[in-house]
Image (cartoon, rainbow, N blue to C red; front, side, top):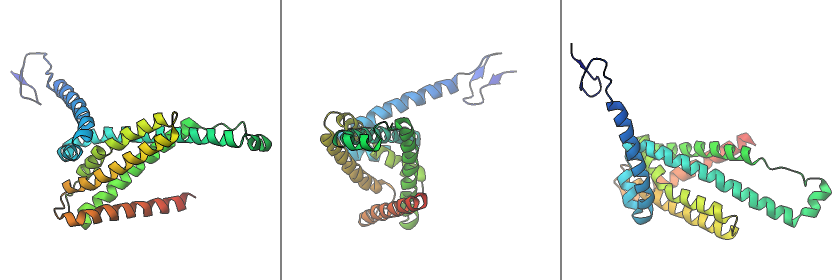
Length: 230
């Protein structure tokens, strides 16, 4: 009796195993790598067109990777910032530190890295969750968290690049590194604002309110959490 693959329907010989699923996984991996390169290039050449093109549920895995890299970049930047601040503090107050017996304090960089990484991931989901609620529930936009998450992931690329560049410059010229970080963050805010256009609310007059309300709610949540944890 003839046997057929349950996935693609291909006729199989006795003992033959169809390789359609393996080929599909390989194809998806290749497509994901291509998309990463296209997004990286497009966010600098045609940022709004790139956000519009990739703001789709099918690119959710791509967004997960991009925001994972974004979280890593935040952690590295925070470490570089702490490193620079500790060096400035030690150079300006070395005598005081020795006097009070704090010269041997070791900064737990590894612990800080993982704490910042986890917190960054949590804040990303918190912000995108709030953006989804405001856009979809309050303003009747597209009811798809994946699409909102993907838009934010694509928009974050510019900040990721600026964070990585800033981290390098923090060890060369800290002031310039911080300026690069601020410029990247500003562009990210603009891109997220423009990205709201692709989340189903057709009235552009409401986009500013969606962004503002989401941001206000986000900072309220942060304040409440800080009060609880303090």
